[in-house]
Image 1 (cartoon, rainbow, N blue to C red):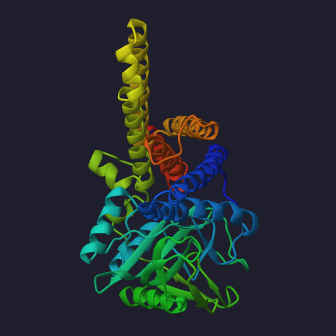
Image 2: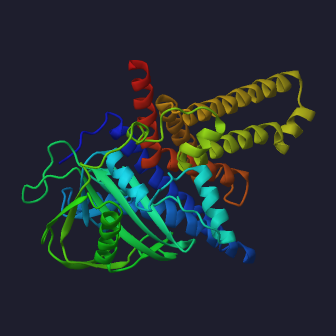
Image 3: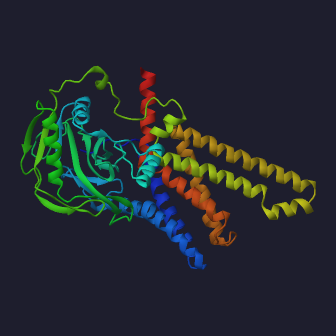
Length: 429
């Protein structure tokens, strides 16, 4: 069932395409520098990062929209549009009941991918310490990312874990064959960390026997909650072998067990647990814990780019020499230009802060400003007014490209919609 698209979808898709072109342009610019100096081989790292995390994902997203079917056939999709893990589990019941049986059955609710959780992942990986609520990568079903995700670490090892994602089915939606269910899930087991075959990103590798992970979750939940019922849709999909979005091979027999948690009793506190992290932001620490990482990266790049542009105006050697040799009119012109640059830099920083607070209009304005800035930088390189080198101009262009890419990402758009919905719900209440 195709889900209704928000009115901002067309704008987001246009910004997505511009961001993809900008990332490709940036990768080419930096790669060219790699042939100029012996030490420039170090530029392989940023070029790989741009290609793996910015160019290839967007290329896959645009191409997969053309050839990957946009209807349900038992497979999830990655945020890049690639076919992901198989759907191998279903649940009947409410969100609070599902959360209760999972958490009391030994599973931990996975954190969102935010600045705080990303830092914690880095620390836990370097120190080899446990992180039982580590985030999972987003997978898409019904045109949206998962609603709930749970995991179990294996002996405190962050590289190995059981995990499952759940999506709430749209109202009135039927499984192939006419059966009804409230939730669909995809359970897999992470065995190690490696590079994705399709995007070259660092990702978890899954065990190919996804049916074993499905049966492990079902048996564990029913052992902890004997009152949970079960029925099985045999041959829900044709048994097959394939690869997921990371290039990992998997096998499935096509059966779909459906757990019935509707009879599980939940106390009032658990029933009122929020299902989204967007509402109720209180301070900067809470913002770092809840806002997606892409928003923080975008605002940081915007602030650095604004400061860099201001410094280039204030301390440009050519401008300083002109001031020393020029007259009063030159100095007045310099003060005017410096003032305008300072106002522009401050405006971008203020808009960035508004984006952190969930301002959808501020995000749209910033993306337009960034697009114009990238266009001007590209034209300066084309007509030769800016020298192609490892200089401040390239750094500024890089920051603008990264900011546009992160602002136009799906996670940033989803965050803005969630914040807007939360504010509307607060006002209506």
